Image (tube, rainbow, N blue to C red; front, side, top):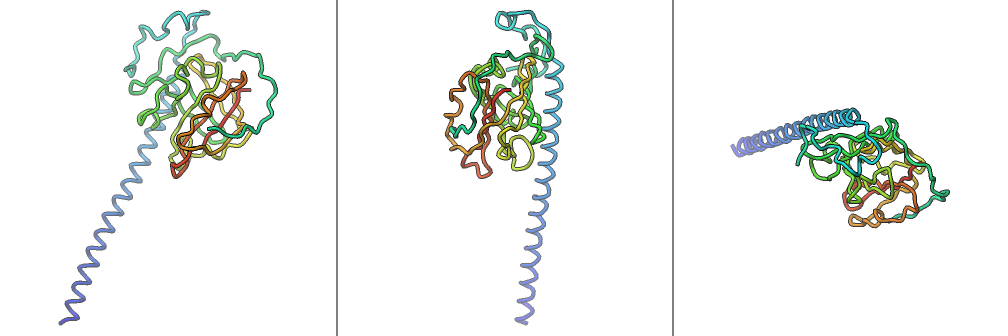
Length: 246
C-alpha cells in the first residue's frame, strides 16, 4: 500500500513536471516565432523606407536648402510630430567636394511614425543596409539606425566633421550585431538627405566604456568621418568603429 502511494505521488509529480515543461516549450516556441515575425516586418519596413527615400528627391537651385524649407507644403502620411587608438597614418585631407549622383537635390521628407529618415547606411561586408533616422528610440532602432551626433547632423552628414550613428546589437546578423568584425579598410557607404553618397573606410575598431562619448567630439583634422556605435553582447561596454571618407 505504501509503495502504491509513493508511485501515485511520483506519477502526479511527473505529470505536473510534463505540463510545466510543455507550457515552457510553447512559450519558447511562441517567442521564437514572434521574434522571427517581428524581424521580418521590421526589415520589410526598412526596405520600404529606403525605397521611398531614394525616390523622394527633388531637384533644387543653388542656395535653396539654406534659404527655404524644402518640405514645406509637402504632404507626407507619416510626417509629425570613445576614445580609441588611431592606428592610421592618413595623407592630407582631400579638397575635392562630395558630389551627388543625382545632381543638386533634396529629399522632400521620408518619415516612419513621425520620425524623419535623413540617410541610408550600407555595409557590404556585413550585408546590411538600413535607413538613418534623426532620433534614436525604440521605434527608430527597431527598423534602422540613428544619427545621434552632432545636433545638426542632418546638415553635416557627408559634408563635414564627425557624425555618430548608433544601432542595436540583436546578437544575430541584423543591424550592428556584427560591427565588431569590421576591419581596417572595410567600406561603409552613407547617402545623405541631399543625395550625396560617400564611401568611408574603417580605420579604427575598439571597445569603449558604456558611458564613453569622447570619440564623438574628436578632431577629424579636416576629414569627413563617421563613428558607428553599438553595445557589446553583455551590454556592459560598446563597440565603436571609426571610418573616413574617401
